[in-house]
Length: 208
Image (cartoon, rainbow, N blue to C red; front, side, top):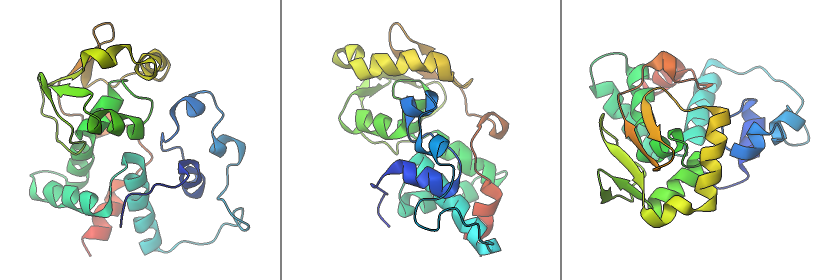
């Protein structure tokens, strides 16, 4: 299945949780989910019972929507997480958090992961001084993520960094907001990644 390109706030209303798909509107309390906290459509306010499979599928769909990845990409990440030592679910979250587009977002250079992906694909991001336009690139601990010189004055980037003061920057990156670069200092621990996703259900789904 291709990546979802429809109205993102409908996804948040369908799942009933904020997936950080609308940056500034979310921070301002103006998201569609805040105004209409029920699923879209004529029967959106009805709550039906969901099967175990439905719950597992729902968690996978939430994760894919939140991080903006396709089914093929997500399955590939799961296969790698399952291959690594340790808890598969925790490995899954750690790997997807290490995607370049997500790291750019976590450093506050973009208000949403979708905007961060655009910065990457349009060639505005340098990794260890070299231009890299692959959003799925897995960042390693110690790597430097920097904006191109011309991009540092981009109004959207400046605004995103201003808003990051309000939303906060995660503990596993070190960002110099003035020089507009950051260091991915270490891999995040699962308890540090605050997201509305139960990866255990995703592992159960793929393990069938």
